Length: 343
Image 1 (cartoon, rainbow, N blue to C red):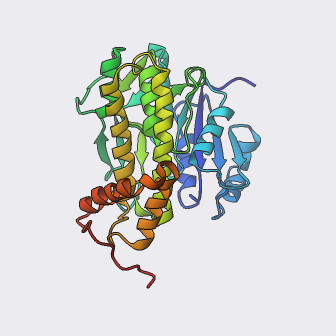
Image 2: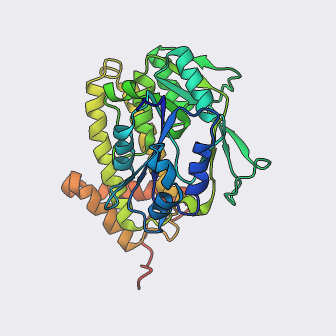
Image 3: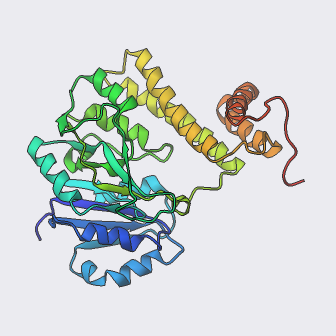
C-alpha cells in the first residue's frame, strides 16, 4: 500500500452532532492522496458507533482508520496518539466540530512541497456565527497576523524575529498548520498534558528551519456554545490549573536550559513565561467566570491547597495574589470571602 502524502488527524470526544460534517469535509477534497485517522477519546454520545457504521466502507478500504480509547485519556494523549499513528509525509489536525474547505489539502500540500517546508501556517481562517451553523454566506474571516500578508511568504530564520512572531502574530492552534511529520518527530515535539497549544507553538516556531505563512484560509472553526465541553469550572479545576502551571514552569526551565537561544536570555525567558501564564490563566479563569460569585470558601481552600503542594507554609501570600488578580479582573472585592453557594 502506498504511503499517503498527508495524514488528516481527527481527535474527537462527544461530537456526534458535528462529526459527520467534519469527516465529509475531509473526504470531499480536491486533493485525494491522504488518509484520515480518527481517535475517539471514549465518547459517551455514540460518536464512535456512528462513525464505524456510517463510514464502514471507507474504513474497510483503509481510507479512514478509527481508534477507540477505552477511557478518556485527555486531549494531549489523544493528539500524540494520532501523530504516532500517522504515516503521511505531512499531517494536519482537524477538530471534530470544525470543517475543511474543499481546497484545504491541495493548497497546503503544494505550498509545503514548493518551499520544502517544515511547517506551513495559515494566517487567516473562517469562523461561524455564534449559532454554530456553517453557512458559506455568513462565515466570518479572522486574521492572526497583524501585518496582514497578501501572499505566501517564508519567515525569517532570525530567532528574535521568530520569537516575537510567536508572541504576537502566530495562531497557536495546531489545526491551522500542515506539519512535516519527520520534522515534528525528530525535534521531539509533543503535546503536554499541563498546557494548551501555545507552548508547543513556541517550540515549532523556533525549531522549524523553513516556516511558511499563507493568507489563504482553509479552516472553518465552529463558534458555538455547544462545542465547548469545558464550560463548568469548579474549584478543583482551578486547583488543577495552578498545578499545571507550576508543572509547565518546570518544563520551561528544562527547555530554556537546553536551547542555545534562550539559555542566557533571561529577558526573553520572562516574556515567554509570562505570556504563557497570562494567556492560559486568564483564558480559563476569566472566560469561565470562576469569580462570578466572588471568593468562596471552596475556591479559597482549593487555590491554597494547590499552592501548598509546591510552596508549603508560604502558600497564603500567592493565594491572595491569585485571588487579587482574578477577582479584580472580574470586578469582585478581594478583601472578603463570600458565603458558600452550598450553605
